[in-house]
Image (cartoon, rainbow, N blue to C red; front, side, top):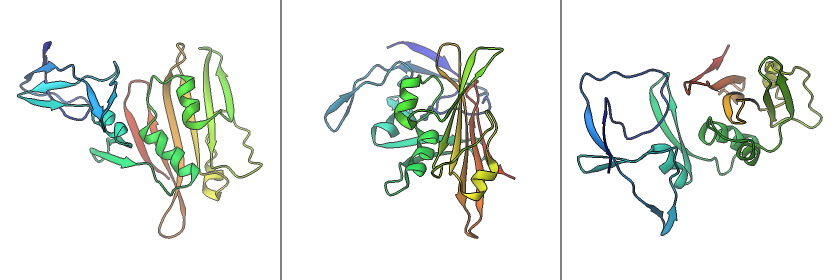
Length: 211
């Protein structure tokens, strides 16, 4: 096992929007192990690392959640890590909104994105960088049309013409670089409120009620 120095050791490998500086540090070990779930071996993949510190194994939370049929995300505003399962009785749109928050990540390729959401409803090119942007109209009513290439149909979300719009920007290597989700949730008053969930190219995240 390889030993290395880290400033702060956390059991959850989730992206935060700010850097935490620790006055001290700990020595931890890279811990190559094999994972089994219900007797079946699962590969962890090169994007994750397992650590050992003072006899305790620290595993990326997102990886563990996904292997157990759930997902994990970090809310930078409330500093909350949440683990949730896909809504079993939810609509197709609700499941796709969940997938953006708990299954999407930077670095995915087009094949993985299409497995999650199907083909995009709109594809545009940024001439200056020769990069694509994909738009998905999630939960759209039959015959729905929206002419803008890179703006969100806020009015359509408020009226219920669709439940969400997802914009995905790709880097020159054909990997997800940034994605913006705009989605509607019904408040107790019955009003449809619009929320955002954004993951930036540096891995930081943002989300808020649109007003």
